[in-house]
Length: 287
Image 1 (cartoon, rainbow, N blue to C red):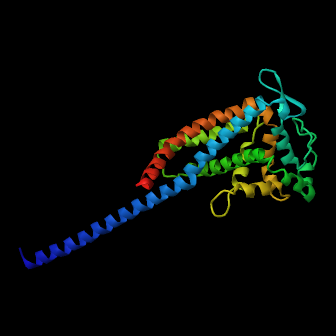
Image 2 (image 1 turned 90 degrees about the vertical axis):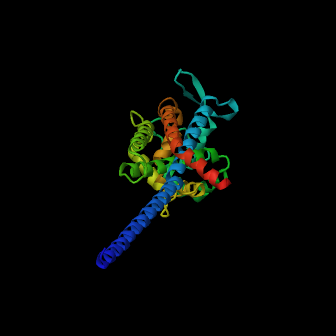
Image 3 (image 1 turned 120 degrees about the vertical axis):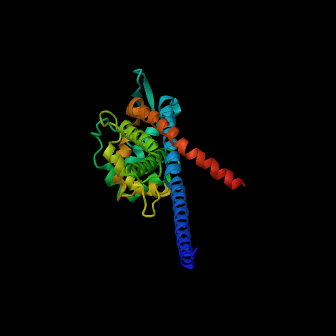
């Protein structure tokens, strides 16, 4: 073989090695980038959404049980509500707590089904610092109602963000799973809205969801949420949320029950994504 051919072979081999090396480095970087992106999705989307869905499902179930099984000592005056069996049941103090937070009134009236006796109390009372302070001093007693509002808002925040990202193809997930999760999220959205729109109207679900996100891509804390709903500026973003829980007893057998069922299906689907990764992380941490 001539020296020219040998030299050419050396050059070709060197170039080929460089190309293979560069391709290998690119492939490795791409794999690492994808791994980091999937880890971030788990930490900032899948795991938080799974927790939020579980918390909301549990909260709705517990609250519905409290309404169905309110003992006489925990009833709100002589107010009653009617269940699906046409049985008149005492309205629990939980209902008063939602009214108190909404109206900023320590002795609130029972709002009628059409909110005809609402007036301007929610807004005007939030401008009354003494009224706000009286509610703030009862924040321990109002904690359960506040958590119900907060957990619903947090779920809507993650659900709205994840649904949007799934629909535009941003999440690293199979097409089959993408379609399944979009369907489940839309189903919850529909069930929470209700057939007649008596739940939380779907477009206003988006408003609530967007309202809980901060500039650093995280949701607001419980304390920040609590202060926001007591403030005279910004609280109006959550009017639909208040209206839902103020009249929770009207929705127990419809929007609440149907939303619970839909949330359970979502929790099961998210578990297939979250649990294997959680176990891998826990195993790696142990070793």
